[in-house]
Amino acid sequence: MKPEADQILYRSAEPLQLEIAPQLRTGYAQGTVSLVAVLNIMAAQEYERGAEIRKLENDDMRALFRQLAPFAADAELRTRLEAAAATRDASLAISALDAANADLRKLLIALQAHIEDLEGDEARAAERRIWTVLRAAANRRLITLPAF
Image (cartoon, rainbow, N blue to C red):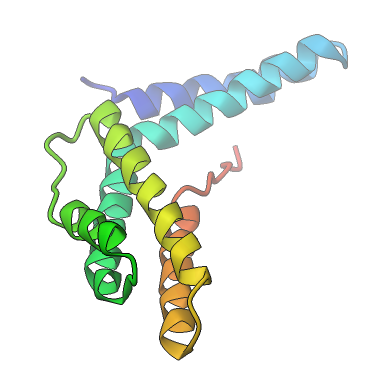
């Protein structure tokens, strides 16, 4: 498709924000138009990088599970971690990546809760690895508002 969806959304946001919103009286209408402009920007960024973000997050969680599975004191959790670490994304469709991401995040929460109950330097190091993955995921999902 030419132009791409992200370009269409950005080009739609600019006149909404710079031309239409300022001409409206302050209040609901102006706020709504400005919100639609911001939503267009967010959708444009999601279009461009959405699959990559989810793929990287899923890969990071699987790598983390491979690293930390041996430290899981709970055998059932260790088995789940090893199984999840061996999975791969079958599709780059956002819906498929989101489904895998949701399952991996549930397991990450279980792992984090388990690690927090453990004592010692290895447990604290594992916590730091988890927070590193979470921080990287949050940083990838930051929305940048352009200066029109």
